[in-house]
Image (cartoon, rainbow, N blue to C red; front, side, top):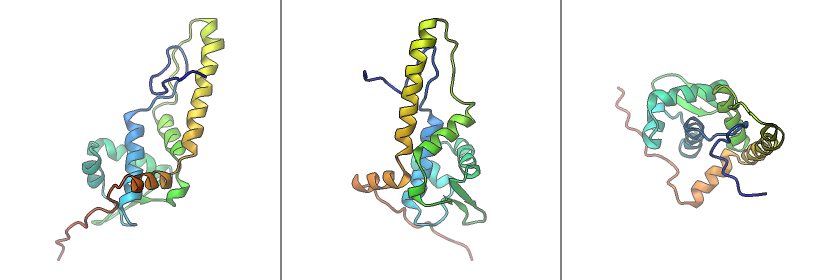
Length: 163
């Protein structure tokens, strides 16, 4: 099959889009998994280190908590931590969550028989293949990639001035 760009939506067909919200969600989960050492990670820390706007990130984090991917920890040392093991969180799950929250897949009206009968099934097949590939990648896999790339694993401990 020809090399098809999965990032650009197809005209007149259901399409999988890689949105900023999806990238932010994956980056947030990966950051927590890779740097936290089990401690709760505050939203501001994630936003600052990943360059994600804080108020936008809060919405994404709440989606991830409701889906059981992250767990919120209340209190002055609160934040977010993984709700389950890194090896049990898959990118396909995060992608489907964000797609569902954004109102599902975009569907442009198909005007022609050739579009409905020929192109739409191709794009749907590509989308299914794309999600299967994401289903095969866990957060643990991405953490291994980060270690291989030499990315520093733990953040410096934050100063605590509580008396």
